[in-house]
Length: 473
Image 1 (cartoon, one colour):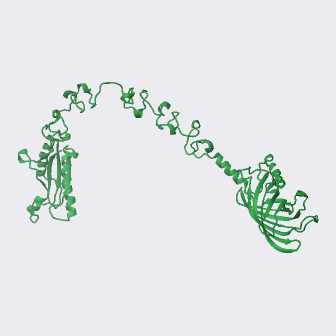
Image 2 (spheres, rainbow, N blue to C red; image 1 turned 90 degrees about the horizontal axis):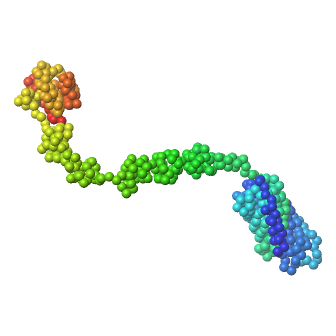
């Protein structure tokens, strides 16, 4: 048996010598072929060592490969032996194999993992199960036998779609009437349908030349293919242009120093602005980047050694302590118009109180009366408003609320609008006499708040009014 495996080794030893740029057969969807097969039935018998001198039986062979990928195919073989040579009478009789059918798996070695897919010489190994119609000698009885062919072969490329095929192997009998045998075959194999090489090359070109981020550096060489970058950093960005790539820049949007991780140092004290408590004053590390100077804890401009209240913001006039504020309204006594009564700054520190205009203050401001359905101010009302204007000019902190009312005559929606117009007439009169409109508010209540009986003319006259209320800001 060793001499036959030696033949296989010689066949495969030629593979590394030949190489080509084109593909070999076996990469199409289907491959078909045919040729001649020879079978040696004597050499496997242990008592004979004739080798190639033994008779060989010949017959035609046809086959089909279904190629699933560059490595694996499924094969179907059909072969026949139409006769045999005259043999030496000293040789034992052997069975005659008339028709053989095999199905199996092919593993191609030019799959890109073991050998190149473009190799002109494409070796493969295979394993099959074979069924044979057998004529048993010398009796001449016919039967069916099963064997297991194992072997190897080579496709010698002639063109992209056509190759010369040679193969050899050994078949082990799996049934009693199937004798072990050595087989050889040669023929032609052709691909029925190839993959279009143009589509592959276009796709490869697209992958190689694509530039996803449009920065002029193709993705193949771009370290940051989805971010617009610069050639200095292999396509990665440097947003602030300080020579430190963004991925290593602690301050990617601020021009800084490489030694400080790309961050700026405005006062050049070696401490980046982000960590410098005094970024615009050159300082020292132990003081957080601030210069050495007397300590002022509360930041009131009075150093602690001279500050009677070092942790409370104060004033120099009070030796660093806050100004005195007796009524605790946030306004120092020296500027508080009411130092013993809390009030807002807008009112000079005095509390806001409602002002009641009494007779002794020269004016009665209960109401201004109008004629039915009208908004005109009569002379008596003008006298009252003139006195009001005098008071407002003398007291700039006073503000005025004007509320219009009507009697119950007419539709209520109309009365509301009429009451608001009456209040608006009063506002216009005050503004005309240089009273700031911001100090005046108006409101219309219609007939909802009568102060007299609406069933009498006298009562309705009293109800047709605009009330004026004065308060401090």
